[in-house]
Image 1 (tube, rainbow, N blue to C red):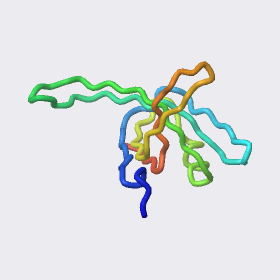
Image 2: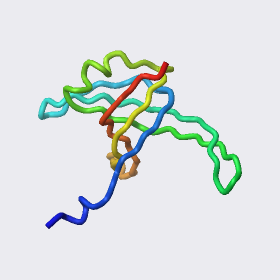
Image 3: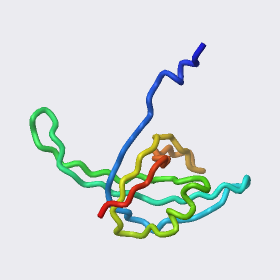
Length: 108
């Protein structure tokens, strides 16, 4: 029997510009992480009206797969990230929505 959590979908795609210098770290288990912030600006249609959309979202790219790819990320670079959303809690108890990358693509 499938667990109920397996029945839900959590996929998100966001394109934009990197707006904070990527930071690199390694977990105690030796897993490499790259953390950066992606800024998205666009015009969306809602209720048949134009609406400005502005999003700044922290992105985490973890694992060997992203190690080479993230070494060349820089502020001002346009990329598209596909992954899943997860809630992170800071040391002071504030929660934040974070995009965990499963695919990163440069936009020319």
